[in-house]
Image (cartoon, rainbow, N blue to C red; front, side, top):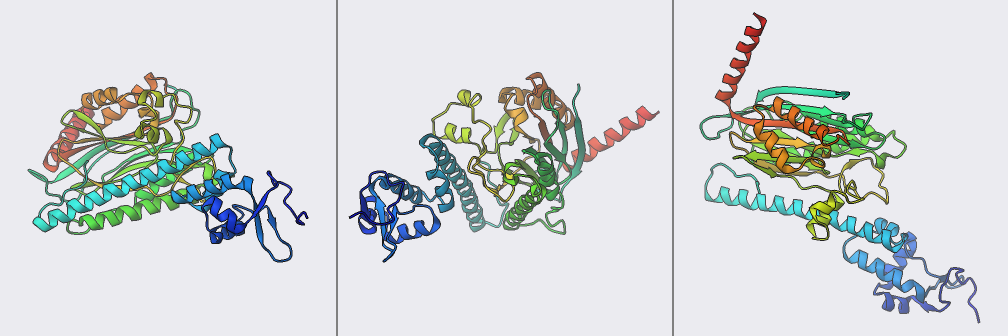
Length: 425
């Protein structure tokens, strides 16, 4: 006799009890009841008299997928989206999720290694604590400044930074959603996207500006700096959410953010998205950030070469960015930036840029431009010009900072004042 209320969508017509289905799907009866309550995996039939749940055998494959996704730690809300997709789209979503997990694990690993080094050094001696080392007809904004940070012991004297920032609309875009800033304590670039992209990038950088790193007497400890970085990153996340809250789709608007905050002896790095930070030291250029993008995750696991990544159709898909509160099924993002500390040396030159520069200019040309420039102001002009010469398909933001001995900084400032006086005469 046919059971009353049999599900219309039952594919095979053969129903089994929840106990039998639990054995088939490798899910417990308790989990199946929970997934039914959440609307994640509905039974084919619920007996109207006794409430017993019955499942169609054709549901076993979907149930196994749910079990496997739970095994890799995917949240139930996201599993619900994945199981509703076709096989190809589900595969893309799972890859994006796992790439984000690996990126977050790598960030935690870097922090753990930093703490190991930090505590080991403290145990050996109360000495200096090591840090983790391991882009005509344009619309432009510029910010050029030089300044000294808190007194820090580094070699022959205290260190200071000279820095400059520049953005360019590029040759194709009509609006500029990138932002850049260079100041005595902050170097930052942000690449906005979506309806509220310009507001998001500006808000992210503005949220960092009040950070003065406890500018009172004495150098802050590494632990205090890491805490300050976490607070700063959280402030940027909140600022972006507020900036894009009025957009039609808040989760579709946001920004990348790569920023370095100067302490006088260290740089604190805040990073999320695919904007980049590079270090020029001893004539060699090193990338010190890791892109939070789908193509970077594919490069990491060996499924894509760097050459293939340049033309991959999903090269713009971010795994992490600062976005609005809502989450879309199409874009896998997290709103928690990576933070770390970077030890500095006199003579270092740091370059921060959006992908409007790094995606169209190879690192050899970036290095050549960074080496050839006499000062940060010339460097940012050279770099934005390189992006335009490469076609300028996107907005460009770049910021450059030189680490100098404080006495040298004062000499440079004096020379600049003398030159200005001569020009006035």
